[in-house]
Image 1 (cartoon, one colour):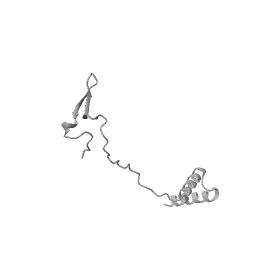
Image 2 (cartoon, one colour):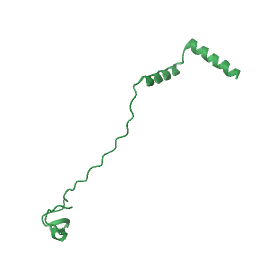
Image 3 (cartoon, one colour):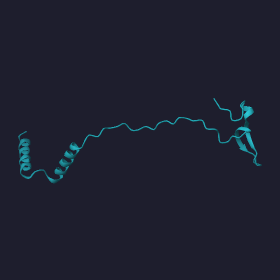
Image 4 (spheres, one colour):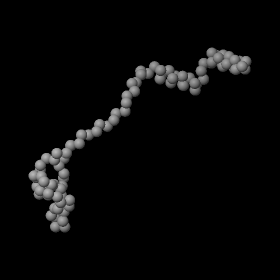
Length: 94
């Protein structure tokens, strides 16, 4: 224990005479700058809001077909007709 006290007093004496070493001086300055900065309120991270689902008419529809599944080699559409669905053309889906 006496050795630690001697060492401690020697360090205190050296610090009193020469001040803090250069590398510790910068560390102390940075610590003081941090303490003097205005407090920043920590906020919760923003979460993305879920988009409301809006019904948009299917791109593959026309006056004859409720859903166009594809086209023949001649270019004629085929798929499910409005009548097969039990709906009038362009009737709203519930």
